[in-house]
Image 1 (cartoon, rainbow, N blue to C red):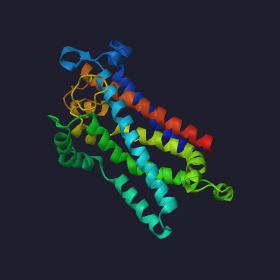
Image 2 (image 1 turned 30 degrees about the horizontal axis):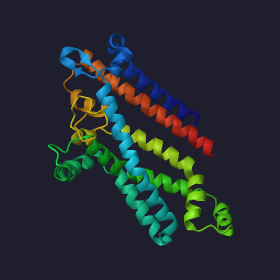
Image 3 (image 1 turned 30 degrees about the vertical axis):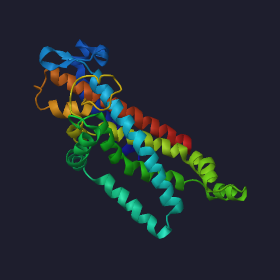
Image 4 (image 1 turned 90 degrees about the vertical axis):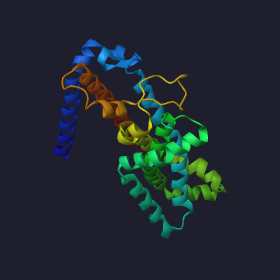
Length: 275
C-alpha cells in the first residue's frame, strides 16, 4: 500500500510538473490576468481564458443539475421498489452505459441531439452550451446512479426499522431517513461526476460549437461556446511546440488538472467524514 501510494504521488507530481513547465512561459507573460480576459486570438497574442472557463462551468453545472434528480430517482427505484431479482439488471445496464466511449456519445449528439434542438427551439445551429450540458448529463448519469445506490444501500437497516416503527410512511422514510443518511455518499458522487464531466473532451467538442466568445447575455445557454477541453482538443495540433499558443493550451490543461484535483480531494475528505 505504501508503494502504491508513493507511485500515485510520483505520477501526480510528474503530471503537474509537466503541465507547469509547459505553461510557465504563458503564466510568466499573462498570469492571472488571462482568467478575466475575454479575447482569444492566438495569432494576435491574445489568450483570454474567460469564455472557455465560463463555458466549462456552465456545462458541468447544467449536466449535474439535470442528471442528479434522475440518478437519485433511479437509485431509489432500483433499491427500494424494484424486485430484488431484477435489481442487478438495471445496475448492470448503468455500468455498461458508464463504459461506453465518449466519442460514441458525441456521435449520438451530432446525429440525434443537435437536429432535435434546431427543430424544437428554432435555432440556426444546435451546437450550444445546452447541447453540451445535455450530453454530459447523459454521460455522468450512470456514475451518479451507481454511486448513489451504494450510498443508499449503506443506510443501516436499524434506522429503516426505527422509521417504520415510528409510523412513517414510505415518502417520509425517504425524505427524513434514507436521503439525509445517504447524503455524504451522494455528495461525494456529485463531486466525482463533476470531475469526470470537467475532463470530457471529444463529446463536448462535437456539440458545443467551439466559439471563443462570452455568451450574450452571459447566461444564454443557446449560443455556441467553448470549453477548456474543447479548446485544447481543437487547437493542440495546430500550436507549434514551445510557442506561446502551445504554452497557453498547457495552462488550460493545468487549470483543468487543478480543478479536478480539488474536486477529488473534496470527495475524499467528505468520504472520510461519512465514515
